[in-house]
Length: 337
Image (cartoon, rainbow, N blue to C red; front, side, top):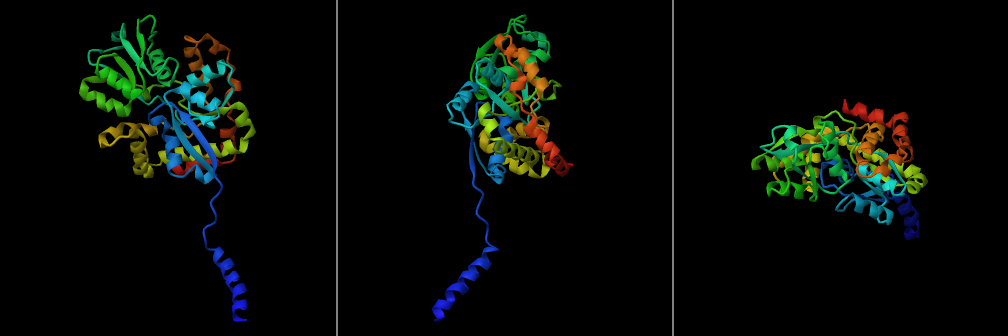
């Protein structure tokens, strides 16, 4: 009898105790994002993943690195990933080839790089006849290089500048040291390794006032259209990641994320990319139409079909607008004041 009575008593005890136990975690939806650039522009994604901000919104996010933007798009088309983190030049080239993409936003509005040159290059005029290194023709690094040169009034053809495909930024920096190229657009972190080798920064692109938007979240058009609520959660997680980066109280944790992902160990090597995060990162993440138009004009030099791309078919500002109208982004801005 005593044993029988203990069963319901034990059950009620479990129910009462359940009020104080952790609730089961929210089911996580997989979200793999491929990217081709190995640099600090991916920091908002890395931070969101490592600090659990995507998981907060039920998203199991993962960044998948590939060699370049073209391969990144290939993984998307093959359904090996759910989204990509591409440069605008890659987006336009992809769409001009018949693949329909939708881009919901990106948090980088500055080019976080130096135009690094040999010490004998004293001015823009000294770039005539020189060789510049890029990762791929039409890719993100090429685009940044062309935007900077365009802002400086340098027409590569008229200046006789030779463009050489070298590889990613680390490979490009090494090519400069070994005299294979004369100049290149280099991340702040890698720039620190070039200064002792006698190179100098001709232009800090982070200080330029040009319409620009770095990598952003893009997916296949039909996928984004069919998962509206999911991509709204993606936008929220990305916005919180940006707010985390911009909060000075989180500098130490952001530094750790950068060191892990950029594989940097020396403190002096991390100062460059860490310092520029506040300069290049913005909570105003909506796709930038002016930046897209500027890129369209520049990329049309190598791919005239780009001019036929309807930007309205790529850009979807509704997700960021929703975050604005709902008070989500205004609340994040208040936290940062």
